[in-house]
Length: 73
Image 1: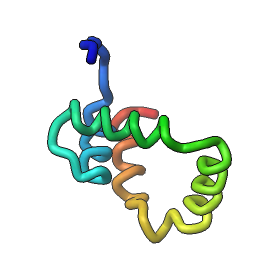
Image 2 (image 1 turned 120 degrees about the vertical axis):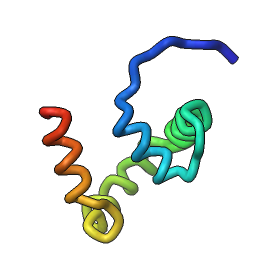
Image 3 (image 1 turned 90 degrees about the horizontal axis):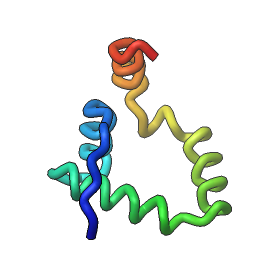
Image 4 (image 1 turned 180 degrees about the horizontal axis):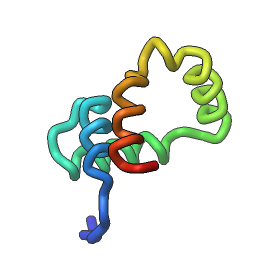
């Protein structure tokens, strides 16, 4: 395993930790990388379609809007 110095969006990391149920930055990033690497392009397309159809049931749009306003995006 290698060490890499990177800048991370702390709000996005905290959100990912809640979504993945991880406690540390290392665990969160490694879990996210494992998930990303294991998903094929077809799986991603199906997941994106599903998310578009079901996003309101699973995403906190008020939180996401607040984060977007806070970060100035």
